[in-house]
Length: 577
Image 1 (cartoon, rainbow, N blue to C red):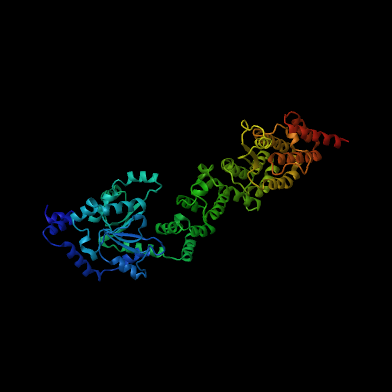
Image 2: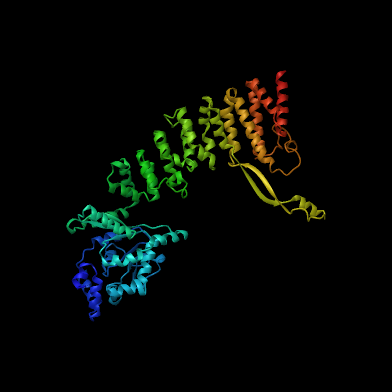
């Protein structure tokens, strides 16, 4: 093929290679030309690229150009080369994991003989010695990449395509090493291509695992690219207060009323946790939920992905605001996440209800909201503070004769956990001390303890009992005592499965009445006290219901229930006099 043919196909490296074979030092000539023209080159785009990394501790700019324009732009922006802005010139490239600053992947004019200019240079850099291929491949694997100023027909992109090949297969193995799949984009000029040609170009980029981002460039006018990078750089260097003020203005509108660049600006700014926190504090239209959810800001609270971060507390409050304003719409959108929702959402709702800040939530809505949260509550733990804020909900449910809902809610505060530890076997120690044979005795044994999940459970439940249930004992006493009886038997069953002593429970509790030697911090004994007090109060206001509970206890085979029944019989006889 002739030189004109190679140039028409964009194969300038082959033309330069032929010239180099003819003993023309093309690298030295290219270096001289580039340096001669460098002083008159505009720096605006290069400076905008530098501004993108104004606050980034590890900037990474890789160029296939040979000139000093990026270095001049760096100095014009007030930066100096150093640890953050180190300069790497091929072939002396650093390990990608330690790379920070500017990398001249194809060399620089200072060392003309190392410039990757001809087809032979390309073979050396990407095939024979392979340092350019290895470096570019590692960049694409470890970092998100944005191509600026490249076209598909540019020779450097043809070389870099070698590094992009096989990325999808490699990313599968990298995922096993904990390296996240990376993304790649290219800012591509839209020069008025027709639909089919534009689609073809997009597909060519995507085959290289790069997503094109089009910008207008009619008649070869690339100022839109410069303006975009410049505006992006300015946004990136804005102070926290500037960002907060801009976000406050953006938050006053619905997301679908914003222009695309305004929405993208908000998405960019909200990657900063303090900015997201302050943004969520403002009054936001409910339409913002869909947008924030699509950006991943509710992944932890709704999906259980990740861990608690600074903005989540504010997002919890905003979610409950939206839920209370339109529960049908919002809860319908997140119904598939019912079992993974964070406990803080239900806790915040209970706080609002306790403070009377849930205007418009009638009994029907309340029961539906409780039912919505039920899967998460039943499957998850850590409802440490919820019991403090359910007094008002419990009262409204009991007054509306929705006892089952109220008892279920109370059961949250009565949750227990089993703790098993390895401890000393005192039988072994005693035999050893007495000089007896110990071969058949285990030196250690499993020690078991049943306790409430929440250390404040006894205090919280006792407070709920006195302030919510006792004032209504006449109307709910029988069902409440029945609920407590079943809960007590459940805990007794759990506790009895692991008891070691052959002595009956009557020997481990001195009296049914309050007694200083009764076990402390024991869910079984606490619930027995609660059941006793509930029955005694019920006896005062409704003897018939108290006798019905007494009759129920007669049918149960449990040592402590038997002692409680005898205690109740004594009270029945005393009050009958």
